[in-house]
Length: 254
Ligand SMILES: [Zn+2]
Ligand SMILES: [Zn+2]
Image 1 (cartoon, rainbow, N blue to C red):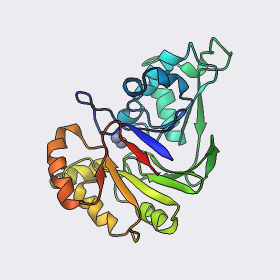
Image 2: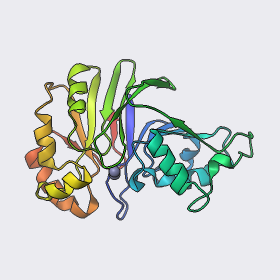
Image 3: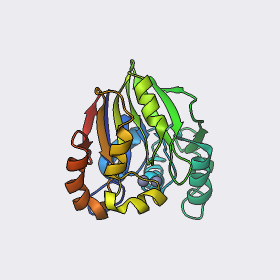
Image 4: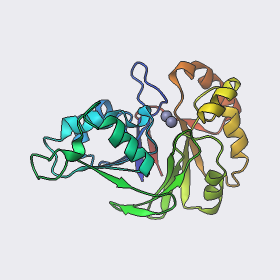
């Protein structure tokens, strides 16, 4: 499996993109940086799995559907927990902030431009040859992480997260998971902010990683906050020498 990090950061600044992972040409996890990274290839995206409704994870959905709806032949399927879908539908794509594309018909097929598919934690489903298992993350609003597998190999993506024993239990129990993609948002001295906003610091992740009883899992981190970047790039190699820090455009082969 080859996945591409279209957006790797926890905020927008300069050219930096926010969370967006491409698992195939038609499936993305989160929608933080679609338009600038994919260009015309955004026409191929048919499914977006959302972790949660924070702006850095959904920001390009309105722009993508606005650009693609006149060419599309099938709805853009937005997949997530009920709370996430209702936040996108009721607060953003509601005619007030952006058109309600779930009630606008495609010119080329007559289907609606957007469809919403609710999913539940721990109920696995198949999507274009991938087996996807959502699980509840520990963040300030309802959030899902995902285990994504194809041909008995896969990765676990935590989404935005704070301490969550479930991550380590899953990794310890399921050796088909070959990679962990998680987050570090703030330097360790900002642990109070990390606790209220439910994000990891390098030290919190380092403590959490002690629960991992495997040494064959590649560990990647993303979601660095641009306003703390230089501190994080100094601290992470010291506290977490074995993790790789992801940047926009990176590819991971699993
Ligand atoms: Zn975020
Ligand atoms: Zn968030």
